Length: 584
Image (cartoon, rainbow, N blue to C red; front, side, top):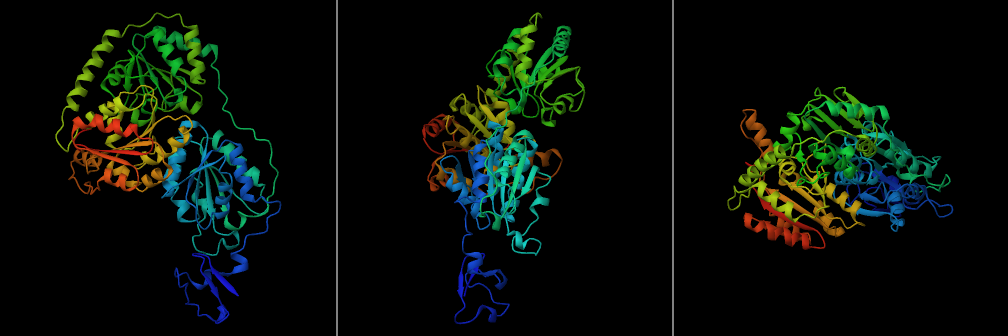
């Protein structure tokens, strides 16, 4: 009789010493697993008989593909082999990125959903593989991004017996998910995959399928049904709400438009309305790039990562016209200031304070109606806007000039990146001072920005760029990750994943050898600066060792050439910039 170790696959042949006669203290000679984790080979080593050639996992994956899932990020392991094999068989329809840490897979999925509105899937084993997903899935939950989480589980026959890697995944994931299903022998497997996708899209969150190991390769059950991909219905505004909004604007002397993430697909309509009435436009950080910074009415970003131009016009306004704005703490908007709020959800409209006029509508449809029905006189902020923007440009120039060898100002680094980055690039930013600086200094054109907006999780920059690259792979749109050394260090090994995939990502690492934002917070709290210094490798050389392009910049005059070389690459490229930790 042959017994197989469930951990490493070592086979023990008991013809010389019967397995039953081995002492209970006996362990696997390869991995040290206890005797209790050995099973007779016919129970653990052979595939179950498949009826018709399709397995339970095949049907689940078929449903995911039918409902628009195009990418899976994850790590193959001993308790997800059945679902992994089903993913492999769909390689013509389904892309796969093998990551080094499951947290990166979840962040990549979250970014993909933010960009496309459709879910990608993340794959893990049971136990620690599944729990590693949690942080990235909370990012998806808080930023309302659709994700499907495929979590392996120990065999269903062993649940509740305190077996190796047993965790109650239903309980652990209950708060972060909008939908959960544990599959069993009698599950309609295709329906399970379809339901996960539908819930992820409609509820804008994480849908989890828990896959016990022994159920992943069962004979298929359940019939395929015609897919009916979910499409979000655009809500039109009411005539009375449009009339009320225009009346309120007509009584205002200093209105300002605030554009949020909910208006990200209404760029043309927003510009038409703003130009029609000559109203200044500020954006939340999430909507940075919706209006080019060189547009005569553009104020830049509001809030903690914002510009003094935006702060001036928002503070001095007597009416805020907010399109798809979440009114987060980071935006520092006064909820009590008179406002018109346009959003496609009641929650978004009523957040923090009641507006003077609430328009429950898709932003693009509301903007079209406002422009079409408006007969208001145009406002004139031209000279005031020009003065404020010129003042800010002078401030940026002064800050960008504060350089020394080995300590480049962050303003200079971002100014150079603004010139080099393609106009329509997707830019994934990590948290910390690099995020604040990008909001202020990057001169956006039509770029789209990604960040861990509500969770604010360090390390998000590179994994999100991986998700963005997959989302934009067919379009050829360039992806940039702008990260600090602290954030990059969290998922440093994922640069090997990028190199393996040949992902066309430019990663810019601001290396100041410090968690500089935390140092500043300690100083502001009258505390000693403690344990914020970092011991970093040479990131450029590390990139080269991974098989990718890498260049280190220690002088400001070398920035332009370094970025030009990086953006010329057809694969991954890393630009390490030695920056001054005292500058934000």
